[in-house]
Amino acid sequence: MRLLIMGPPGAGKGTQAAVIGEHYGIPAISTGNIFRLAITNRTKLGERIKRIIAEGGYVPDSLTLKVVVERLEEDDAKDGWLLDGFPRTLRQVTALDSELEAHGFHLDAVVSLTADEEAIIQRMLKRAEIENRPDDNEETIRNRMEVYHEQTDPLLDVYRERGLLIELDGMGAVEEVSQRVLAALADRLGR
Ligand code: ADP
Image (tube, rainbow, N blue to C red; front, top):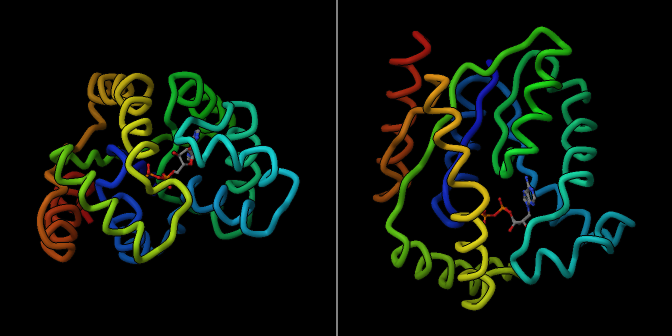
């Protein structure tokens, strides 16, 4: 099983990714988490991307691709995965296509969580107090939204045209959204 989960910042991708990963027994791989860990651990990668993330921009494709390819080569990702927060640019889509093709794999589905923009901005500001994420302040959040609309929104059309997109309402209680997501996936994938 090879899945993507997409959606604007704060739409709850990470939370639902964990639920889906658990349900299908595949690792939920979040580029955002990998980057944040690198920053916390002050690795070379972390030092390079810290400013970009704090300002709400995108990490350069070259760095992102290296991180993803390395992660997909790990043992637990052999039989499937769910990618959360990748791809985010058209170049990343192309790179993922090549990576899949090189191994004779294909995507099974792409879950897209939709959400009301003002509501998720409020949600992120609340999360900022709890999780202390460096990129959850109002200015950065607005910037992340803008970058998302500009660079990542167009990817939905790509996957829609391929017949892979499952669009779901990401608003509501976590359990409610999880049920919606798992039901839609079961419907599409037959399991
Ligand atoms: P969000 O829920 O706000 O989208 P993520 O945890 O997915 O948060 O990502 C946090 C930040 O990490 C992004 O704003 C971006 O700077 C960086 N990032 C994550 N994934 C990618 C990617 N695929 N390409 C470029 N930058 C990325």
